[in-house]
Length: 382
Image 1: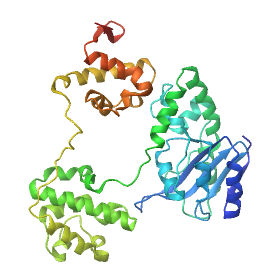
Image 2 (image 1 turned 120 degrees about the vertical axis):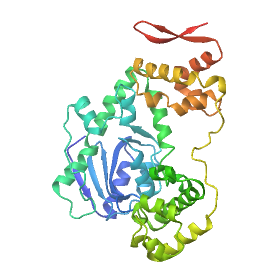
Image 3 (image 1 turned 30 degrees about the vertical axis):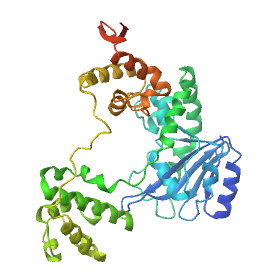
Image 4 (image 1 turned 180 degrees about the vertical axis):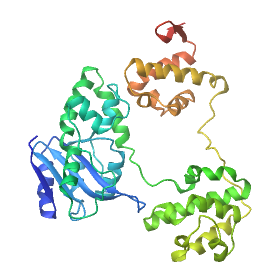
C-alpha cells in the first residue's frame, strides 16, 4: 500500500472512491463515532484503506449510503474488533460487510486473547501505533492533524496485518475456523437492547421484591424505549437510582416524582413525567418477571455434575491448541450441547471435531476423562 492519504469531504469524491473500491479484492475499514450523549452511535469519520492508500471520509459532510455497494460486494472487509463498527455502518448505510476478516478474532486462533490493535501491530509488524486522545471530539471541525493521523493509523496497516495473521492461521490449518468465527460475528451484529430485559443490568434492583420489583422492571423498560425514541442515553432520562426510587415509592403525582432521589427535571420534560406515572400506576400490585432467565430446557440432572469437569477439560484444550478459550467454547455452548439442542455451536463445524464429538463420547460412556502427570485431563476410550 502507498503512503497516499486523502480526505473525502463531498459526495462526488465519495462516489469515485466507491467505484474504485468495488474493483478492490479487499479493503480495511474502521469508524470513529460518539454515543455518549445519544442512544445510537453517531458516526463522524469512516477510515478506509486499500492497495492505493488511506481515505478518511467525513461522515458529517458525506452521505454514506453508497458505501452499501462496497460492503455488500465481493471485496473482503478487514476490520479489528468489528462489532461496534458494524453497528455504526448498519445505521450509516444500512449494510454490513458480506465478507469479513476480523484481525482480533483471527489473533485468537494463534495464541492471543482479545488483543488490541496496537498490541498486534507491535508484536506482528513491529509498528508503534499513534497514541490518540481517547476523549477526542470527532464531531468537531476542522479535525486536527493529530486526529487525522490517529484515524488513518487505525486502517493504514490492517491489510499488512491481515497478510501476517492469514499466513499464521494457514500454517496451523485454521483458515476455515477463522472464517467461520468471523461469519458468526458478521451475521449477528448488535442492535437495540431488549427493553424488557434491561432491568437485569441495574444492581440496586436486587433489593426489591414483589410488586415493587414489577414496577422497577416496567420503569426500566419504559426508560429504554423512551431513550431509543428520542435518541438519548437511558441514564440521561432517568438514573438507575431514579428507577429504584420510583419503584420503591410508587409516586402518584408529579410533585411526588420531584421529591425522589435520582429523579431530576429531565424525566419530567415532554410529557415524560406523565408517562412514567402511568407506568407506575399500571403495574401496582403486579407480579414481577423471574429474576433468572429460564433456559430453553433444563440440563438433565445426571449431567449437571459433569459440567464443571467438562469446562476444565475445554479450558485445557484451548491452552493445548493455543486458542482463545471463549472462541472454542463458552459455558452456554457446553450447556446447549449437553441439552441436545440441534443448533448448538459445538454440534457442527470445527468445534464439533475439537470438543463437541469428544464430549458426546464422554457423556455416552464411550470415553472417560483421566488425569495424567504433565498432561492434565485426557480423554481415553473405554
